[in-house]
Image: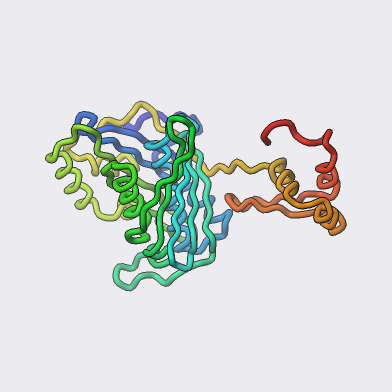
Length: 315
């Protein structure tokens, strides 16, 4: 099977550093598959937030999950889905927002939180840094454009198991979710995820074959190190007639912050507080989503008090 052409024409190949999303069906349309290579996304998150190794793995898995959820739960091409994982581990919370158009952003409460490698299997201790007591919540827009948040208790802190549990318990969608991040040489070498959903009419035989395939695959992190994303999908759907859609979709870490929004955020402070900011030479505003730093000058702060300089509509 040849890999479908990407929507982005930036010299994309299976080994490209650009992240992307693949979609497909199997078993006559009774299985839905969505997969993402989020390597460049997770590496950018690591650099932006100065994440520890274990925090990188936790946020990287969550960013992949947010992208996959946006594809399967989003009602429009630009629909956004917000995933929040709140555990009792040292990392605190994880928040990731994905959009069906491939944009994703996210952060953690404590980017420096880390734990030793697990002695049992030599893997990063993601469940330990996240914690297994807490909840996972997903916020999305319903058909009437009203936000809806569903939440379920954490089952492991491994992210993938928790997302699968959420889809089954809150959305009533039986799903298999595989997420992984591999770091080598101080950077993210591979990152990605696969979500397989059971659609109406799926047979018990198909589900049994799918479960056997996923068991035989082993950890997705190991697979991503030696296989392309398409090959990972083929392994999961082995013997089930995988059909990949016509185009791969580019994905990227993309925040919606801006200098104008950073300036407008200072309007939440009183005039006296803004006067103090001006006297101190300005104010730095930091976006928690992407860690972008905006240095707002005294002149820009002063202009906030001038109605004629206020932006019209949303920034």
